[in-house]
Length: 265
Image (cartoon, rainbow, N blue to C red; front, side, top):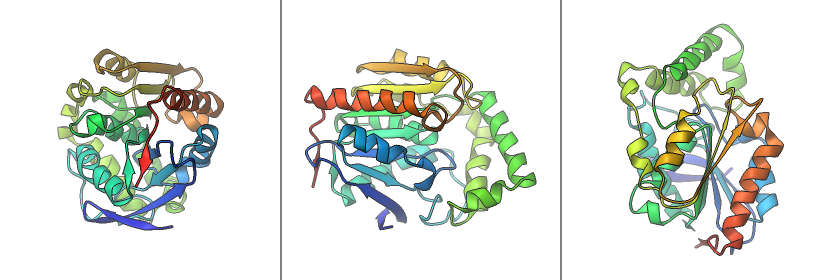
């Protein structure tokens, strides 16, 4: 796959062909995610909407540069305000629709709520977003840490990441640090003016519906919520048909309303 440099790091990315008149769907993966771990969701979504797609692995994930040290407390803010804008500029993508999952959802929301980018998006679709700290989040991460240290999880993650241990501990350590208990992006949500679709499963071990309710209460643009039964932290895998239908409908509605005319320079 090709690589691009953003925020001083080489990032692996994949582009998916589509109608160049339509906005690019930019996929932001979860906290232990990568291009491959999206499985076929990006291809299916771009096919259902006709939009081009960009899937990339952030610093420390997938085949992008290996994490060199501990992640800072504000790593999602840095991704949203430095790395993502630089990557979009390098690849010539303007006015995209962001599609984020978990940490990637939070990064999408931070980007969308921060000037000047709050005026440069067509829309944001997020799955299992984090907007505030909850104890259950770190409880789930501690369980994941035990699995990483006692099962074949390192080997399974190693199929996707250049250095599974650095990827895993870089994610787990920052989320479980005492300072992270103060993490909260609710004040940023009030800066979001583009349309938002937020999806979460009722069985999500990483967060309650307080995250979706907070988004709906604070964003200033149109907001649609989808709360899924029989769904945990990964809606596009656990409820693939409902998730694909909802996100495709959201994107197609933006395009049909004339809000989706994006550009690729």
